[in-house]
Amino acid sequence: MAYASPEPRMFTGSMMQNITYGLRHRPPADDPDSMTPARRREIVEAEASGNSTDSMDGIWTDFGMIGATDWASLRPWFMQCLAATGGESAVYQRGLREVFDPDDYPFVAQPLLRARHWLRDAITERGMDKLLARFERDHFNPFASIAENMLAGLPDGKRLTVARMVCNPTVRGLMEEYGLWDSAVRIGRRFAMRVVGVYRDSDDGDVMIMRYPHIDDALFEELVEAVTRLKRRSERPQRRHQEADTLLFATMFLMIVPKRDGMDFIPQAEREAIMAIRARVLDDMPHELRDKVAIFHPDLYHPRLNVMDNLLFGRITTEDPRAITKLRALVDEALERTDARAFVLILVALGEVGIGGSLLPISVRQRVQLIRGLMKKPDIFIIYQALNSYDPEERLRIFQAMKELLPTMTLIVLEERISDNPAFDALYDLEDGRLVRRGQSGADQDEDTVPGDGEGTDEPALRLLSRSPVFSDLPETVLRRLLAASEWRTVAAGDFIYRSGEQSEFAFVLAEGEAELVRLMPDGQPPLHIAYIKPPEVIGELELLAGVRRFSTIRARTDLRLLRLDGPTMLRLLSSVPDLPLRVIQQVGKRLTSEAPTVPPPVPPADQLPLPPREREGAQAEPRKGEG
Image: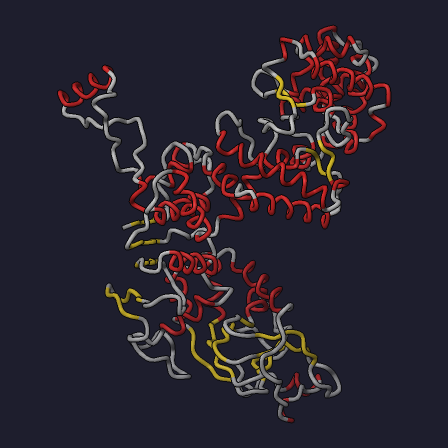
């Protein structure tokens, strides 16, 4: 059996450890011939204290439980479970942005290198070289930062970072030796003033992080202070400020990307000095930098670039969305052809989830919980409101995919409300403490009876409300309060449900048939069509919530069956459903972009044509046929 709850239980560790938790119940066997003295003492002490003698080390995963033999043979099943729960695309996109050290996961780095080599040849063969500026030993890359160009790589991020490169004596010594230091401070100062001027009082903080990923909040605050001091020309800056500001401006120089920030920042003389430093680093790397800089190499996976940059081994040169889409499609093809796509997904699964899964949003934790249950191929899977962060359509799609993946599995879904759907073999409702199979608790209501009257007579109305875009996902108690003051009505084809100018006393939920939103025209002209309305849409709710007379007119295109909702009761629900107005606005927006009708419009009777203004005014007191 497998069970999934509204609040997924997760423990500190990687996502993959949480996913395979249901398989880890086979203690690794000890080999008496190879057992170490320390392990023997551990067993003796465990027996003496009454504890388990099983080792905490080793692999506890029971691969045979699902027909696998090791981690490699487990991978295809993991991929199928991931696809069934609908998380493959999101995980894949996240995996392309992951940064990892190939020394930690060499089994992931190797297939990605295969994909890089295939992609390099494919880009050339398809004439797409102009879309990419590759990292090449003897060429200045204007789409890469000055730091990347100067080092032909990047700092390791631990012992040395881009933000602190100029504080390293060796790096500064090289810049001074090749005459680049003074230019770096001067150009960096000008660049810093531009960055601070654009982002200091701007709300586009996320944009700045995307453009300048090496500038954190602390560094940006230092930069603001340095530029502020620079503008106070009447005050003589202190010596300690002068040195700190010099280092900041030199740092900003290293973060410039010429093609992004302006080629005028890096004149030809400075580019030549940068290339001279690069040659020195590549040919005779200073001893102090050997363990602190990772060089770009076409046959080595780079630990400081994300997966996408490693695959491209360069930078995209265009902002044309069509060209970028074409290039990314080629990346997808490279991963598929080299069987490396799965490793991008596994890379995300190797990430830490935090204490109790705190590093993951609830939607991801709920999806991980489903994958964990599917991984062990259960006979019975009980899902108790375990996907309440997803909309009903997405939940249903996941349930169907799970059944397709494991056709013999019994899937028991417990929800507050479940709409009728052939995907379920049986539907049961909890009525007065009893499980009653849906459809066996009474027939539909008569046309003019109150849905709340009689045993089981409110179920069709309750299901209709739970399917409507305005009232879906509301608690059943709220829906029943609304149904207590409602009744069924019918309207003949061509009749008006209501017209503009009338009082807004009711809202309606369309159960059967098709209606249309029209505009009444003067001088006896036919009404002007605006939008089609189909079940289970709600109508008349906008004017009701606004507290104004009807400013819209709704006409039946076919014979209609509607559920009429009491206006005052609906207004009283606003305190318990604060987002009700937003739901109404969303439905109106969708209605105005509705599809074509499914039936031809009827010809309205002569007595249903719109009245002239004077006659309409005098006729408001008389109820019309089909009027709510």
